[in-house]
Image 1 (tube, rainbow, N blue to C red):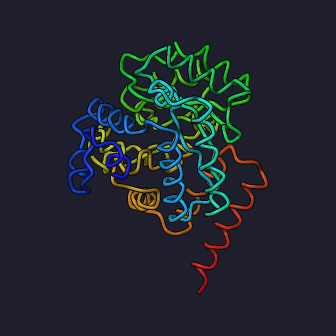
Image 2: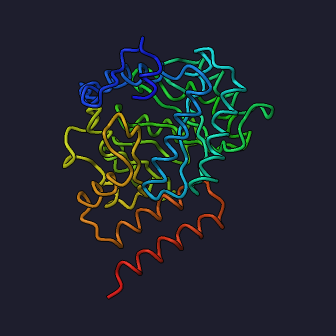
Length: 314
């Protein structure tokens, strides 16, 4: 709402109650339309810095120690934000978050699929140019619509990003079938899959994901809000866990879905009938699936163990 107030020509409302209605989606295509209207609020490096810093503040309030945030630089540079100023803005916010809140942020640069191969080329250039790429960048992704946006066409861009040392984390199987997940694995060499909701339709795919320990980034509330899944009770997270697939819990675009990471863990606890130890195991999945270094992973998992043992102490 603060960004909307800065830019009164935007159609995004500033009133909190009106925002709730604005963020009620009829389908995934409607979500993308609304999402793009929100992206249009980010018009200056100061907007980029403010938004990134406030996301970090919200994460710190939830006791998040480490987060890999998906950022779409193409959406900002195409609106006239200087690419170096963009990088400086996110890095300044990242460093401020770590020093002020103790929350460590890393970046995933994301191709907006709806913008085509021009966006893929620009995103890849920004992610692989050593003169531009930010220190916090660890991975390379692909989001946006899946229908009419086949994953194989992005292979050359992912190949370049992987060669530059980045990890592959595309979205797939959110609004299309399991074949899109297979494409992400085969052509984009995915190390994690964003959403992957339709994977439950293919037992062979579930077996592959489980065998190769390829995590699914599950976002329950988002899937309901965008109508990718009809109801929470129909969400396939149970099938994933039953098949032995590594599952991590994520909040996707929290303000747009009226949720946060803690709320998503509460949803997962209900769907999977988890106690405190079960929730701790889910949190450790996220740590293991992250691209944090091993000492950092050990530190966070140790903190989880300490909290759990204290919580469960008689």
